[in-house]
Length: 489
Image 1 (tube, rainbow, N blue to C red):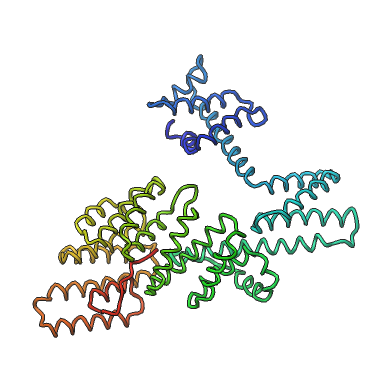
Image 2 (cartoon, rainbow, N blue to C red):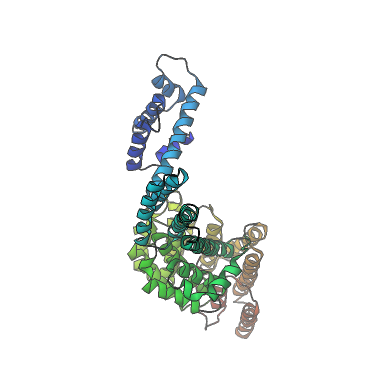
């Protein structure tokens, strides 16, 4: 029973929520079945022991001391407790959205034709919306629903000629849809750039055209402006204007956004810099590093005390690339405890290995990389590339050539990598193999022949459009104008 869903779900509740759930199950309004309440208390009691006794037969004997074990009966109680937990979690979420609570009250009064109560609570909700700190999707949706009910109430029972609320209803409905369309399109567009996924964005072009034709109408809607700006940084990557607009929002309108929108603002600002860095524009490294430091200081990078493993990786990569070794080592160790538990050791070991590599401690790099498990395609790609660079630095030709071939087969067979990404990686591996073979025969070539071979390689690398980690190849081939940029995710 210890592996049952209800026991696992209860284990995920923090102490405060677990205490609330006990009160919830004890309430006769929500639960009048005593064995279900007893099951909850028994699970909590046993989970507090060093060796929990959660065998089904034992639990049943405690619930029904004088009965023969009945597995189906126990399953029914467990199912009932799970349903109560689902309802409790919905209640918790409901309590976190006070506008929705008031909106449901207004809706109930309207549906039951209790119009005196309806108009009273609708007026109260209207005042709450006027004082709402953020114009987000909850704000637009609540205004849409309130104006819908008030508008139809006035048309049906007061004066058919009065339709101001119905006009407002449509305006708020449009803004709600536009905001949700933009917000979700931003996340899906970003995901499409990272993974081999395709989406039909349907009316997005129409929405963007409408906003562009009605700029003044949306100028005072900070959430819509935010996601409109973000989607333009994703769709019009070649111009920096929209990125600068994002920076302006970060500096001037940050306080007008709720916590989720603030996180998106930081995240997509980071992602723009990351794309530019991966395109070889090294001037964005210092800017991104400072943005990350700002995000750590403000706490926006942590969600309920947890830092995303890829933010952790990117900060480490930047710190190493900028040779901020002391700060980076402190960061790696300080924020290890803030990583998601199931990703903690993997993320810590990979990033520690990256630090060792940049400090030219290559044996430590290899030992630490050997502790990284390939739980994610990104770990496989990044770990392999770091190991490749380490073997190259150690001049271990045999290990290098073996790794290049193994990596090439992995890239070709992997279905989660886009065709464009596969081309970039296979081009890289092709040039890396040529570089390794040239360097391996360095003592055989004359100085002029060596330079000729390397110059030809440099020319081929530069003229090839899609090459992952181009800067490293050029740098190791002797192209002095290139400053190496480590890949950022």
